[in-house]
Length: 417
Image (tube, rainbow, N blue to C red; front, side):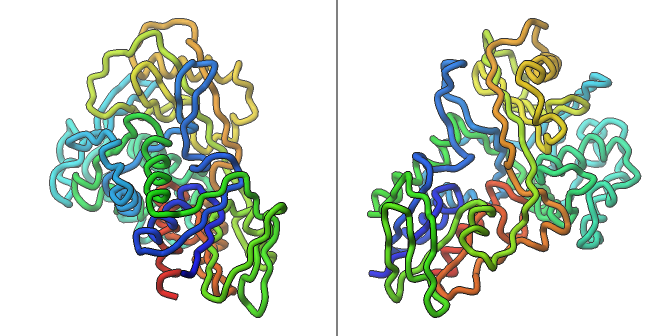
């Protein structure tokens, strides 16, 4: 049987492998590190004495590619999914709190209800969403919503920064439209948030590995691809240093590695080069605070922290597009972030508890209009070589949904061939 070789065991590679295995194809996976999942993983932190995620990720029921993947590997029950969509926020400057609650049906009736709207906004403000459909390919978020106002500061900007991980002054507007349509354009069911009950590994990765192993997929760790051999427009060999693999006539390759690695292996490949960082911090609280909302998170406006997630006694903070803070030491960051957590969670002021700061310096590519034009398609100039990764041209921002969708696209291309 022909083999599809998949290089990279992050979410893109795993999604491709799962799709191909489900279709009865034989796959072999090669991963440079000693674990699967890439940036989407959990581990035991010695300082906190407990298991934490490498970063915080918020999924939505409307993320169709991710939900399909989770359904296939039998992991949908590993997520907390509130019965109704509700998104709590706090503005640290004013102290105001509100909850965005999309209404039933596709039409946004909720914008006519003052109790559901963002403070200081009126229904007409929400017509600004139409600008997403009219924006040029070169438009940025800041240009699109140039008039600012409460809706921009308290909705569009935090949504864009969280989704695109790029400062709004240079983030491509065209990438925000599919986010809005998938989350808010398909009714309340699609807007329901999904939060991993245990951790990212337990939810996205471990079930996928079990699924693949049960179907005979070969998974090889600590195998870094050094060179690809091409003959007559096809991949004919893979060099992993200590191991060389020859591809037969019907064998195929899916390259699911970061863009810089892919460009190093394929000299004729153009990829987005500029990257953006993300900061995450996990605070081990003395006790779990009382929480009035079904959704275990809160959006933070006007602070260094942008989102705070609660999982038992751990409060996890996310700062996207964190370029202006990425070089600050943990000693500088922790007090700032803790002050935001104290106010957001309404807990008694105290010195910061044990904390782990995690810096992903190259979390995503910088999702500017120019960079978007450099995202490559799934198919390459080589007959049996396909690309996968959140940085490829999925039409989505570089998110979990994009990574999984890219894997599905690569698997589909392999099967069609």
